[in-house]
Image (cartoon, rainbow, N blue to C red; front, side, top):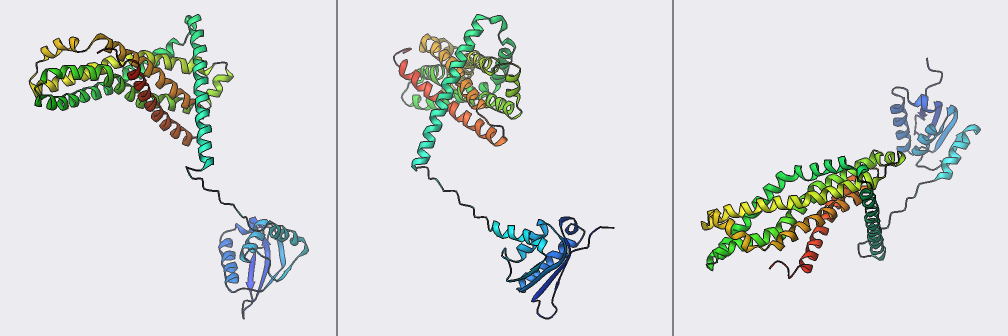
Length: 374
């Protein structure tokens, strides 16, 4: 049996002008089966009939839950005619002092406002400083690796080469082959109009080996491996594995950043060679189908059409692109906060930034080596 009297609220029979409350108005009594629904109905009836007189002197026990129910029924203001026990006065005084919560609306900032522009500038400076710091730490770790190669992270480097290089062979081969086919078909149609079919080898060789091969491989690796690196570091942040590594005396740069940068710098040139080969095979097949150009002629003319310097430029691009992709991915991975929303945003920004930086670096290569390989 409960040790309290059930709460009740009675209204005068004639005009509902007087409401009388009795019983226990505390949380244990109010949570009894069917009690809350009955009390809410009575309070709603009293509120709709604009009851003027409230007699709460017969309430045996009251807490803030019961007082809040009555306060809400009164429209959050004390009725003019209220009768209650002295020990219950404190509850309603505090509710009256609290008043209504006035929340200020957050001021909407336009993208062209001064605050928004300054905030973007601060974010950009913060990212630049963080990126420069990461490069400096990488230089220190690389010097340590050269001084003590026997204690280097060889297993991590090997594992990253496998994940970022070997496992990317399939997608790079498919995309490279299809790009070669498309480029060969489009070029063959234009060259055939002017009788320049023999120059198809020159166009394919220069375009693929010097530009398209390294750029395609870098974009695919940025979307595939760059996002994977950022997500991996982000999950380690969420699960506090990065903090655990610091507690155990394992620096992030030497065990996480350095192996990924070295692995991508090694695997990217190899992927460039692989992508070049697949794109040239696709172009050779399309040239044979579209112009009837034999495979033997294509392979014989290719070394003369493309100077060796273009091949080395492509490999150099692969090394630089791989290092940049790894650095950008690690930079955004380490800046992810310990929540899933930041993980998704950081991974997306990492991929977009990596592809943008790769294209900018390719433009720099084009400017620097503008007179080389022709």
